Amino acid sequence: MAIITYEGFENYSSFDAVKSYLNYTNLGTMSFISSTDGNSVTPRNGGSCIKFVSSGITYPKVLISSPNNTNTSSGVFGFSWYNLLPANGSWGTFTPICGLIDPSGIAHFYVGINSNGNLIIRRQNSNSFNIGVGGGIASVNMNTLEWNNATAIPYNCGDECSYYYPNSDLANSTLTTLLATSNDLATLNAWNYIEVKYLLSTSSTGYVQLKLNRNANDTTLSINAQNIQTTARSNTNSRSLVFGIFGSDTARVYTSYFDDIYWADLTGTNNDFLGRVNCKKFSYNEVASYDMTTPANSSTALSNFNETYSGISTISTRNIGNVVGQTLDVKSNGVGNETLSPIFVRQYVHGYKTEVNSDIALGATNGADNIAVTGVGFNNDSINGTLKFRDYDNAPDGAEWTNQKIADTTFKNTIVAI
Image 1 (cartoon, helix red, strand yellow):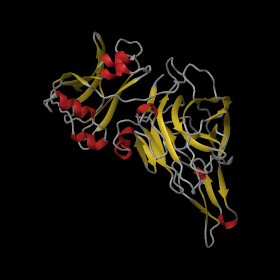
Image 2 (image 1 turned 180 degrees about the vertical axis):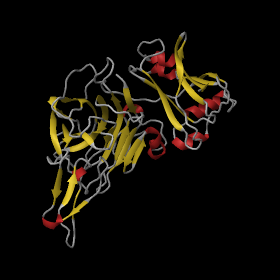
Image 3 (image 1 turned 45 degrees about the vertical axis):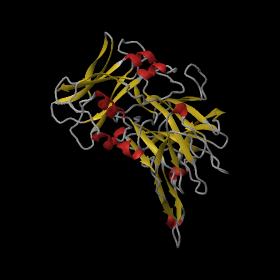
Image 4 (image 1 turned 90 degrees about the vertical axis):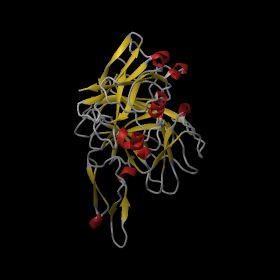
């Protein structure tokens, strides 16, 4: 399995500060919370989560795209969603909470909930249709209806117009086609972990499977729809996932919470559901080796490395080197106290280069076992910098990660020539 991306929303200053670096796009306003809020919702696992609040006709959403804008036609994704309704509020016939999106911003299919609490998957259609009667007809083209289209379409305009919001009417069989409904129900006023495994197909050769609140070793499927058309798009490429309620109730305030998102393709051997994943960030607490130029003190360098990530603002407190081979090698010993089994490790670095033939290379070592450093491809934008990462499926010894192996591993940041 190749991890496309994952997110736990921890250690960020604000959504707007980090979104461009993470390749995220938003409709509406969103925030991160790290403690219990006014709705008595607490982020999962003692970390943080993302939160958005509806306002009138605006239901905020976040689009999480592949970091490298790569496409995939099959995969599995999971996310935690807090099932919360306002007083006297309800879910409709189909209220989407997540969608798989193609490179142009159009949905292949949506995952949502109905008024009973069943989870539902509906495919976005490809037809055009008209709204209104007589000379007041307005046209809607589902092939161009993007996930963030909140535009009101006026029709039957005389002294006043009527308005239609297609992205708030996705239960309409003209807009979407039912693919499957779960037998079990999402728990109200609680975090629910939802996983979807899919193969995109423009004919009846695709499939979609769904797990609700199951561990990785539990083979129970809430949805198992086989030999179906899973997209009405002309392509089977997906590049993004969108999270957020697609609603139309303007009389009440709906609040969305999402946490612990993962998305993977189906390559390799572990090409299946991962279970109720926890995505956690860990600070480094030990400098194994440091010989960069600025700052002179390695403790200050470690503090610079561990600050809350703020995108462009983070670049002002930087560690600087000017000689090939200089390095900042760090460890995160505290991971050894974790109890959950690790699956995957991602090492991040944010910075820029001043010499065209230089770069920062990332690697890892644990005793005699070594993963050689490789360049991340820094640019020379000294104002914004760029956020880069390296993924490690396995520990330096080639075997699966354990918490102790992560704690014992030195993560290297080395200046190299290119």
